[in-house]
Amino acid sequence: MDYKAIIAKYRDTTGGILEAFNAVQKELSYLPEEVIAEAARIFNIPAAEAYGVATFYSMYSVEARGKNVIRICESAPCHIAGADEVIAALERELGILMGESTVDGLFALEFTECVGQCQATPVITINGEPFFDVTAAKVPGILAKFQK
Image 1: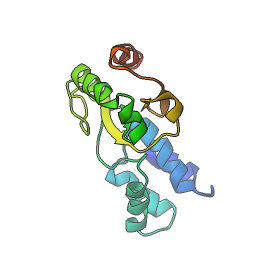
Image 2: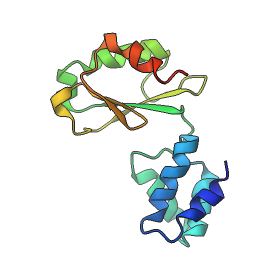
Image 3: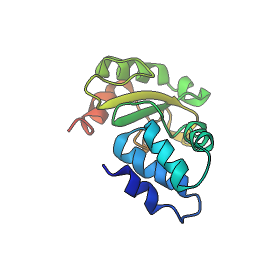
């Protein structure tokens, strides 16, 4: 993947560094150090500022992680609705704990703050795609869609 070309494409875009980071992370699932350094160069900002952008927003990761990022809401409504059982099912099905990635690099499990769908709790997102009213029984079927 030519991350330099991807970043350069957003050079003259308002908020371009965010767009560039989104595009690169979509391909790699995280933002390696060399990507952040290149973004600093292209956008003519200090490396510390580019790193600050990459670490400020929870949607970005500067650490390698699984390709399919599963996030589960950790707000009260989701937990009251059974998020703990969903977390246990995800961990059991994937063989990892929250904050980890599968050995094959296919999945990562992360907590997130409210995703704004409290009417359909618990909610998980996979690569930003929301899944509503998730139960432990639904977890294997949801994961199967991403195991190809």
